Image 1 (tube, one colour):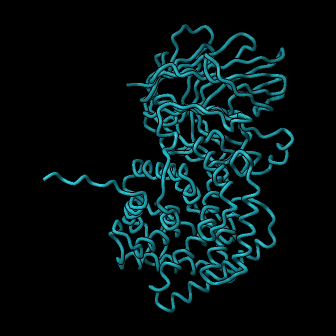
Image 2: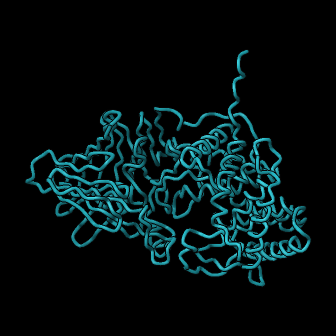
Image 3: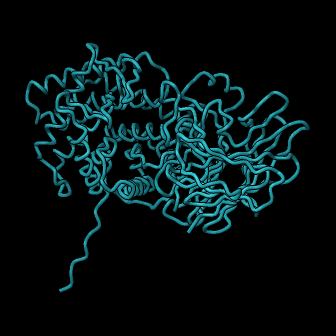
Amino acid sequence: MASRRSRKPSFRAKILKYLAGGVAAAKKRFDRKTGRFLAEGGGWAVTMQDVILPLALLYTADDPANRLRGKKELLTLASRGGDALRDWQYPDGQVEFIKPDGSRWGPTYMPWTMYHWVEAYALLRDHLDPKRRRRWEKGLRLAFEGSAAQQRRNTRIHNIPTWHAMALVRAGQVFGVDDWKELGAEKCLAAARHQHPDGYWPEGSGPTGSYNRVYVHALGLYHRFTGDEAVLDCLGRAIDFHLHFTYPDGSMVETVDGRVKYHDRVGMTGLPGFGVTPEGRGLAHFLVDRALEHSPEGALSPHLASTWQYVPEGSEKAPPQSRRSYAAAYPQKGRRAFVRRRGPWFICLSGYLTPPRERETHAGNRWIMDRAQHVSIWHEKAGLVVGGGNSKNDPDRSTFVVWSGNRCTHVADSAELSTTKKGDVITLRYGRAACKVRVKVLGPSRIELAFSASAPARSSVTAAFGMPFKTGWTLKDSEGQAPSKVDPLRTSGEAWGEKNRPPRWFETDAYRVEVPAGSAVAWPVYPFNPYAIDGAAPPSEATARVSARLKPGRGEQRFIVRMKP
């Protein structure tokens, strides 16, 4: 008798599998004395308690794919985790925001944790003992009353108030407070109207892909809570934006992001908003599949838990990331950026800039980076090969640096994108200097970057790109220097003078880079990190700086990256 063909697990079943896989790690991090889920090394932040939502979901979800339903251990973990939140509250419902490194950022109504806590309460209230239920309810009411008071005074459109607004709608439903629902709806609709026509919410005069997905997540949940179709158009535009700026491994394209650096992880924020169209559901399913590939052990993601709760199954359209070849300017009218997938390669050229008239406004804002890095290249064998993300007041993390006398310029005034037979080109203007980057795929294992410039006499132009070496790689070069191990705390570098004869190259475990005369490589170059009090970036954000001095008007300086077998 022929065996029955096994059915592939559904999108929602995959989410449950991913969440269930994270329980073991959460148990190891759980501190029985305080009810806190601690970081490695013992640090803690209030947002680390957000795992109580996926724990509550796994305890209650009535689904054949959920093998943990009714496990008392999950109820204990979630209950103690919620108790720790209540213990940490001030009398007005705020919590002190500390980070695992011990830095203190002051009292706040922490929006992410408040939402995940109220959803956990809604799932568990019939399973909590009366005393705990009353205590949780008092803490939640205090927090949301305080949040509502703040939002009535606040007129700013931003990702944090938008999340507060969505959470107020849900808390209003849970506790029967119409005023919270009305206020939250008003703020959510204001955020939807504020969206840029390109499909993002401006922060720092342009997109921030990671935080854009915070808006998408919040407005997607708002739509599911209320059925309000007024947010569907903006969600459709946002889906189109993220279909363009997602690497084939599911990580986010950092090149167009005005704040967040490159990370190879697959983010789970935004999926409830993606769930409103077939294209978005296809992207959401693609991201969950990539997350399972990247972390097969899973994790207790609160964002995935709310996705399971509020994204129904429906028809899907496969995202472009599943194809081996495509190219697109974004948006079609305006051409602010360009992406190309060709075989194992993915290229992004970003023309998103901070207009000169707005730079002074952003100069003192730690959260807004200079949009000065305009090229990223990804390969399926090594992940990100060129790029890394924007920094602040940092010429070493920019694509071009132009010196005119004593004046240094590393932020472009304008950008123009074009596609030619010789490759994809971005032309950037820095005052009177016009600088070009051309990128051309030469084959499955080779890609060319070429830089050129036209500038006034007595100007000096340097072209550069970042390469995120991995710790432990061996670094070699054509000059016969002793091979060295890549270490984020150890500097290394090499310069190839004009008189050195070709071929000139350096190589890592993953690729060899052929470099022109007058070029140099230096490791490590760290960006400014707004999330640390002292601005120090973690080792994962370090890149090598590969650079070359350009001779304006005298041809291109070409680099060729060859992937190793």
